[in-house]
Image (cartoon, rainbow, N blue to C red; front, top):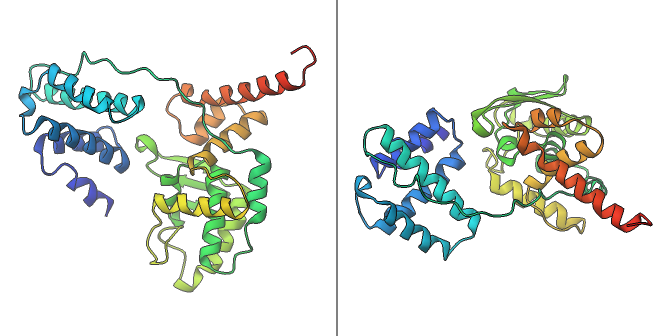
Length: 300
């Protein structure tokens, strides 16, 4: 079904469709990335009001960026610049243009925020507060939260898991087509394995374990938005501030680093292509250390 959705992206514009197909096949971009890129290019096309792609100038793009900058934050404008550079660069390589009008566009600078994470004590409180599962849905919610935090998965990676991807006896999960289309294996902790076994037992009324691990009440694969709602509901129930599911992934990495895990191992667990991405968590730990030093050291 996902392939069908991907194939329909950009179908109203052959140039956009060709670029998205390139991203999907050559770059192995996720469906979320493809949709975001399509939306950016659709906004640009609407702004240009039918102006042919081969006639678009750098001044046209600058006017679009100026209009966009008045509506969104710098981070969004930076993404717009990146999309235009990629799209027109692809058109140039295909011989559809003689130049790339976006090549000289400047990208706005912005401070890179530190990952948002949840304290270990708060996560212990969250998991302790979860009621003992009495049906598939309670078991699903508990197992989902354990997998998000225990494995450091993105929400999209968690909902993409099938029972065939799990080896509960070995404590291992096969994450297929993560960010960048890469596969990886991640360990399943004891708490996650126990929660998944409970889910498997309560979901057994539908037959043997197969298909999606995390399903909605229509017995279809859970979507990413539902993951956010499940987490928000669990946090409210125990009186904690709401965070998005990605904060559990950040918390997994931060707590591993604080406990002495090396960056390379965390990089492999999270599926980061670059160690520089993983190194953001050293800044989180350093910020905590600096705060503790300022508060408790007599010479601070």
